Image 1 (cartoon, rainbow, N blue to C red):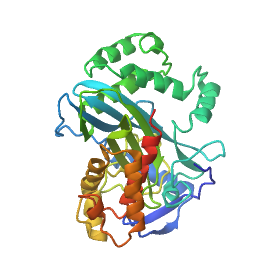
Image 2: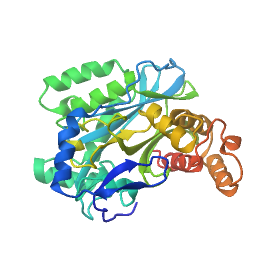
Image 3: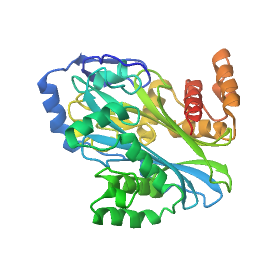
Length: 368
């Protein structure tokens, strides 16, 4: 992914979420920042918690995803857990934080396009997984960190793999009682290791659900990428679990700046993370906000399916297929502009269905 110079922060007077552009006036003054800070207490947080979700028992690989604040008030985490019954098959965590603009960092997709116009002045949004090297160098300087972000996060993800969800309760208790995280989770040195394990537990028990393939095999490889499958106003986190050369499950979600009055925000939006962004907006998950986002899409673009219904249809289509088979579908969708998406991917009506499938392919290729 290329590095970039971030566009100056812009006040969006209105958000045209149907990819039909923005309108607004410049808001790079300290007054904008103060206004944003003053409204943080009115923000509704939406973590994607779904306690009503139907989750299959053992024999089906299920992905659950949740948004959390395991480490301070300046970032939020996307937490993805793959389960077979009550056994954790895999886990992925990435955290997102605003940093000072610099060529040292790689921003999330579309940071140099419309999505970046809502950033705090002089900053851009990064994923820590992709920026482990510069972030870890900063942590070594500021907090005497002895390991990279990636090393500690990998240790946590490896630790939970193969454990029962209920086992994590004991782990969290032990982490809170001991002085060294590495005494409990080998290889992890995060001061907030308990927070990350808690986030995995919360995702495994209450996260949004993407149901996968029926199987008794818990051996999977996982890949996760940041992508821009739909226009310039959002970025996506795409996670894929592979069994052999076939997709066992996938989870796609996108993040976009949306009106604070009608949408729920990612964690810490009412704290430091939310300060300085375009007034009246918050960063929200489309999947966690499927109802209001879909209502807006119905009004603006005559959408006939909800965002989650489309995402589910794409996941259902992808699972059980090889990368080559998915690539053939993407090529077919791109090469036949007159063909209805639903004729190729049953139940999907996204105009950018090919973009979402391509993101799943990219995540599948990254699986290891």
